[in-house]
Structures are given as structure tokens and as C-alpha cells.
Image: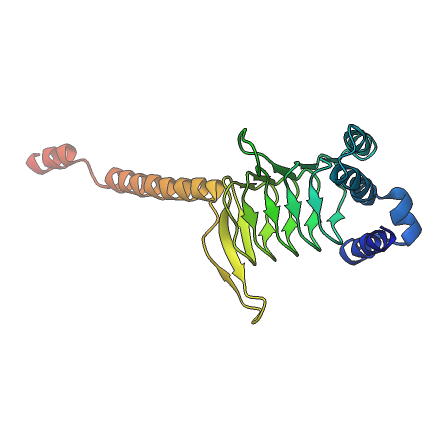
Length: 227
């Protein structure tokens, strides 16, 4: 247990530039408190101790704002940055060296028995407010963008974004190459482009009207010719 706690402290040092000292992490980091308390609740849960694991989990939520079911499996060196509003369900599995930001939900997409929460691979980063729902798998080294809603598997080393989330970028860890898989939807950009086309059309119509007004009136020209 003490070895895991030391690992967790080092993980906060590695992933949070604001961390200044071990004492600060121990005393003033809700994400660290949440992880340590969950490890205690999970041990009690595995030993089938009645009620007490949920009480520890409830206390955890009360002091940190982070709700982790005692049945959830958390890997080594999990870092929860800020953390307020994070929810991790009973059958969720989180790998090693994962980074979660505030408001993340590892939840259930629909009512069902058995495995119903996501499995998160090693070295995954999940951005603020992202929702990962259902018994899906997020592959090792993947990145989930802030605000994304993930309802399908995410391949390893892939960035997923959007609602519902789609794979938009792949990073090859062996070569360091990053390539775009799909263009992100841009409703605002599409609206601006539509306005630009409309303005161009109106300018063409205005130019045509000005050109017509510059020409002499045919009826007046004919009268002057007859006279």
C-alpha cells in the first residue's frame, strides 16, 4: 500500500507542473486523496466487507467531489488533475499512468448487468468534461478531447473528439509521426463560409444593378433621336 502511495505521489509530480512538494500533494490535492481512499475502499470491496466500502467511497466523494465506486479497478500511478465532478462506475477498469481531468465520467450507457463501464488502457489522457460510456475499450496511449462523448472503442494512440466522438488523429509512437484521420466538424466555420458565399452573391447582384443604372434609359434615348 505504501509503495502504491509513493507511486501516486510521483505521478502527480510528473504530470502536474503546479506540484511543488510532497507535503503539498499529501495535504492539498483532492485527486490524490480520492485515489488513496479508493484503494482502501477497493480492498474492503474485494474482501466482501459489507457496507463499509460504500461508506468509504461516500466519504471520498464528500471531501473531494470525486465519486469512484469501490468496485472500480484503478491502475498504478493514476493522476486526477483538479477532479471535481469525476464519476467512475463499478465495472470500470483504468490502466497505468492514466491522466483524468475534471468532470470526466466513466459511466454506463444503458441499464444492463455484468460489465457495463469502460476499460481504459495505459497512458491514456481524458480531457475535462469527457464522457466515456458503456463497456467499450480506450486503447493504450489514446487521447480523449475535452467535452467528447465516447460510445465506441477508441484504437490505441488515437485522438478522439466530438459528440459522438470520432477518431481524428493517429500518433505512431515508434516513428513519432502524427497524421490526421478525419476533419473535425466545424459548425461555426461552415456558417461563416455560407455567409461569405452569400455576401459574394449579393455583391455581384449589386454590381449588376449599378451597371444597369449607369446605362441611359432606352425610352429617353429614342425620344431624343426622333426629335
